Image (cartoon, rainbow, N blue to C red; front, side):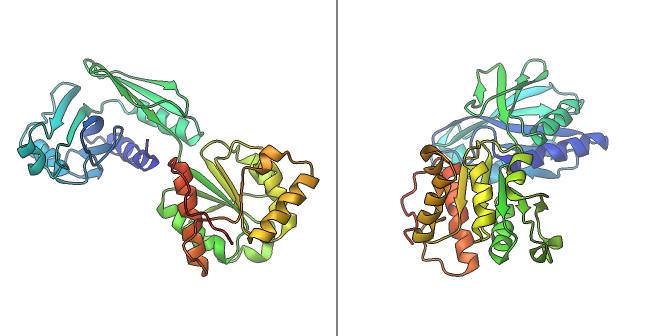
Length: 323
């Protein structure tokens, strides 16, 4: 699932704890060209306030209308299925692409205990499956793997929820500030490690959490997993290489270091002399980023995050930096 949807569940938990009625909609099936993938969610509060999206268009307006005109009664079944876009005319009416069809579960949230549990497990960087039985509304949480996908057989919905993607920045210099700001907009949890006290000033207002210790200690302390990217940006081999030695042997899906092609090759040679395997060194991204002609810190940050997001989304890199 998109980790942005975790914000939907946080709102569901807050609203239910405040005693407000909440209906949770989840995209369970799509046909043709659909604007949102299976697993996308929207929560609708009893006063019509919404968070999340299932279509990015008029479907949201109709869901609100369903609440206000009584099509979502308070005493209705715990879960029901609704479909949009069956006919060409209905698809056009709801702003769906030509031929697009969405099927949603309409779920009345009762006891929010499962919501709290799911959020806690995701915060602990666990991938969780939520099994919703349509007939009863019963919810069961189980452990899942990164290869699992949403499955719906018409009776049971098994949706996958994962922790937020994380980005650990080694170095708190100017470039890191741009990277951190953009990464937060992309819904990454941003972590920063820099033992140099001179670079810490001004980060109080930035959206990022400092990890104490030396870079290699930071990589270990955050329990690096497959949803973690690590980038060394200090330009100081004593700090960058310390982080890379640990990061390249971790499960991080992306490990990169700032530097030109020449300096990147020197770094690889140095890592080999320090005992890192050729297989691990092959994982290193350097120079970092996609080729967009970047020169300013903001442009370099954009280039870097474009590469990280592409790899996160399984997209083949075709415009890799050459300098």
